[in-house]
Image (cartoon, rainbow over all chains, first blue to last red; front, side):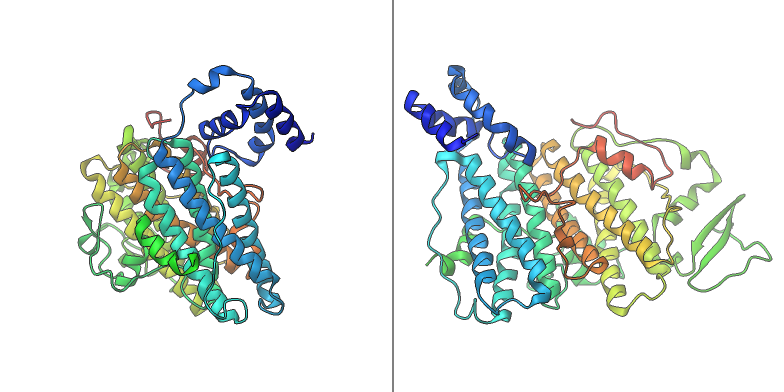
Length: 247
Length: 237
């Protein structure tokens, strides 16, 4: 099936198709599994013929904004790894499999979010990278760690705001834990612990519970008390971190 | 625990399985596990009344049910790693011991956090069943660790949409990524610098999505490692 031609044909016959396509995408935003992507295309086409579609529930504007925010971060990660893999002599042979696997996921995340957002998807910005990112492997890895750890924090920071957009929340969580796996592995390559202990974090209260006074934790280090919980970042904090990449 | 005594004739080897009589029952515990504060010992304390061990535990309903669900999984993980560190598998390197100790500590913090957060609504201590794990064997231990971590990640990912209090979603998010970091690290120990840290067996290669499983999928798997029967008929779906 030539999908693009099919969609073009329908658009000719039905000028509003593009609108409803994205509308339908919004309704199903981020619900896709690999099987559903394959199965979902005919549903979209069928949906365009269904005038009732316009009355369907759509995701909140907040959810769409969050999905575009996520897409922007995924664009950055995707381009970063593709450029890294394309840079001759940058990534040692023994690390190629790890970086390729991460790159594969970031590309998949971009495609998933773009497909889900349809015409609402933001365009890929032009990114810039710290000097030496693609000529010095330590610099490349340091940037990778920053992007992955920040990605984890960025998704985490939006999770609660998606409470009324269950389908999007679920997918956001499913991406979030993949970013955490990436972060853990990049950290291992760097010789770091796979978990985060931000030593500037001096309070040990989570959800109103003071971890320091819990039973059975007296022998546990501050690093491990901190490492047991990954902290979120707000959108403003993430965008400040990402600003150097956004030129 | 005051009734515990060694039956004459059973030998004790440091770092080995150590037969312990509790009441009328023989328990195998690991030398050094006593001070680790694992739930094994809590469970032993209930042995005066054996029915408390086998009585089903119901997770409850609503957000409380989901938090108890998480608490149950964290109990399982904490008990597992407590044993792993109490009786290191043969050939455990210093780096591995440090890594697994960190994970043990994280899981204990998670367990105690949920217990405290749930307060009077917390389920009791579960009795683990690790008979399928050979704690002296690296592959067996790391294989089980991988299974527990991946299961935990998929459980939190699947439970997020069942939570109604946004603060709990954030807390679950803070924990699940730590579990995902554990999973990746364990997977890297098993197959270093391969694609396995986020392998195609657990992250869908087409969508790049990690697994998300409902409690109805997770609990039967977890139950294999828990003697206490867990019921979850009232959990949100």
